[in-house]
Image (tube, rainbow, N blue to C red; front, side):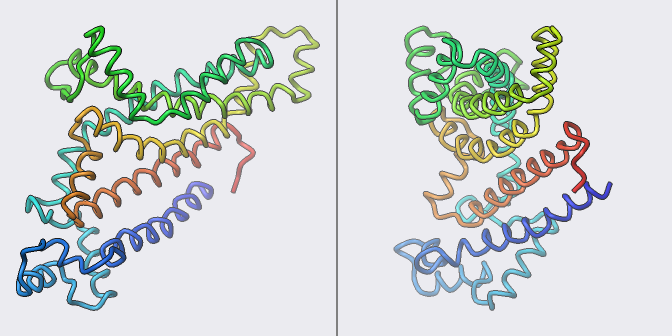
Length: 311
């Protein structure tokens, strides 16, 4: 319990720093934020009205206190372009993004961990070299290029999968999954490459320990040996899964743009193009909170794999 409380307490200053950085986004942007939002044809009165509506005429500490108090009540502000609550816009776009992220992570973990284990068990052999070459190539190719290649092959040439768009689960399980295959595959290949390389490296280190050599000398079969080595190598692998969430968040923006998926990535791009700062702030705050939460869960999971961890 002390370990859990310490890890939770460590999240508070992190989120405080995130909140400060996200808040200062408007004030660190070049020019007058109110003038940018008002547009080129706005008058001085229009700019001043926007400044007053957003509270930009108040002292900076007071602005931050008001902003934090609104966030504590679940109010992320109002979109400057659509005049809708930012929290409502994020809630509407959360479904596609969560679907892509969860299925991508599931695909990457289920594929990368066995591949990394096989590569480590066959270190120096042809299978190991093939897996590592594939991982390096997948990690080196941009997400959007992988997406376009998959669209050309599976959608245009073969006609098996839809080119773009998203179908909610309410429209049926099959349409829902068919529209997620290509986005999750294009994003998951990069994430899988990172996780495969880390799994191989940690497994090689675990397989070189004395207890593994003793188990082999006693004639223990490959299955139990790999299982014990994998348990001892689990913490670095889980850490990579947590760190890879940042890669996943950035990749979702590109993936949703390529496949025209109405998720948080598309919402962010549209907000940037329209200089809709409240929406940008809200999306960044939510994405940062999700990233911090996942890393907290990763920290808490260390005790499951290694009971020696106490602090």
